[in-house]
Image 1 (cartoon, rainbow, N blue to C red):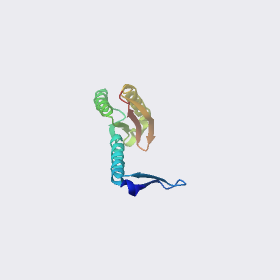
Image 2: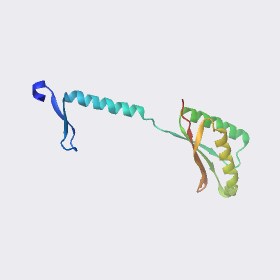
Image 3: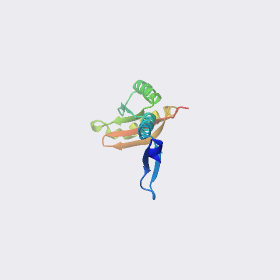
Image 4: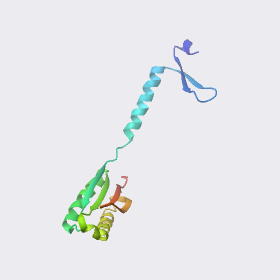
Length: 135
């Protein structure tokens, strides 16, 4: 039947019993598959992660300055990794670091949502904020 129509017999699914075949133009079939793959690839978005570093005793002006950068990153659609880095003996100010990160999360509430609450990992207290979806 395929030869009479001047087309190709293409096996669509070999795993079924009996195997599924279609009579169609094989070159066009390959072209359509490539086109679908390209569409799928175009729809996927790469997620970039931007970092903002604080100290446990970050001043109010510095906090506001870094918050503006955080807002810009979240509006771009990037994830935000905010962390407090404890040097030397400043590790005794763990509570201050946590308060700082929670304050940042509260002020960025309209731009993004907290993905991971502040967690101490070694000398860093890390928190992730994901951007809110645009409507």
